[in-house]
Image (cartoon, rainbow, N blue to C red):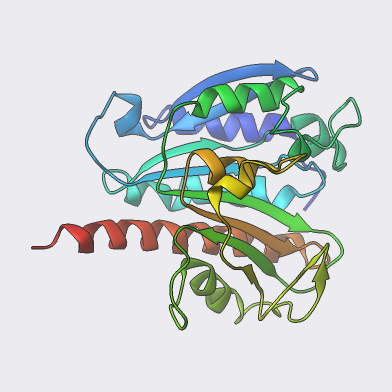
Length: 265
């Protein structure tokens, strides 16, 4: 696969708009439009109590599979979830970095470290977009360029008891047939365990994080369940895209089934 172009992403989003998805410009940043999508039912003002799924990708520009996998999922899989979920999507929060294959925005800042003090227009716009809103699940799509194995972070309040197969574990189980899972590797101050970095975190503690990433921001104020996918950046891009698609499809199925099971008398 050749160099990625944001114009191609925008073209795909405009094609989705022709099928009923609402495309909104949240801001202009670094010479690019920062876009958001809402599913066709929400786009028509649907107020029904469907589960709320929030998805974001591309805040780190050198992690293209999140953006490309998300667009592929929106085209090929998301239509079957319309009417079972409400979906709000920020497909590429750092187009400048995405096109250049660099982590940072044009000003050299890591956009995923300023949600406690938004400065960049894309971060400010995303914060405004979700202000006052609640979601049942946030999927935060990333890659780790240093890894040949996959892992993910999962935050869930309250954290379930021992032995519960969480969404994060379901995603990893599905991925394990395609790619190794990181186990016992250091990721900053944390360590992977069969692909998972997880555990209890009080939301008031999350709200106190300095240089807060988007996952912690959303967990603190907007969603009690957050999964941050980290596909292995050293794997082939086509495989990484497939892993992102699989993660999103597993998440949508989990959220819809969970909600529908709760409504059965």
